[in-house]
Amino acid sequence: MSALIIPWDQLSPEALHGVVEEFVTRDGTDYGEVEMPLGTKIAQVMAQLRSGKAVIVFDQETDSGTILRSDDPLVKALG
Image (cartoon, rainbow, N blue to C red; front, side):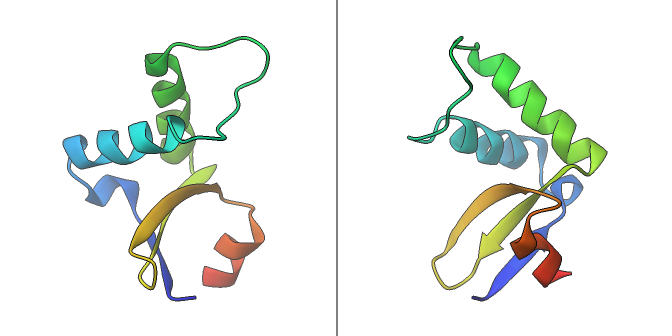
């Protein structure tokens, strides 16, 4: 895997919003029994990025990105 951690603060506000919105609206993203508004989901992920609890990871081989918890083994392997 050829993955990179992308610092969230290096993206333009528009690009960051697009990455986070795409992530929270993906099929299979589950927020429990109670549905949350899109804005709330985005705000929660943004807070996790700002606090360092989550990071943006871009895989150059698949030309795709995702957001992972900072304690995810993949993130730790990227160091």
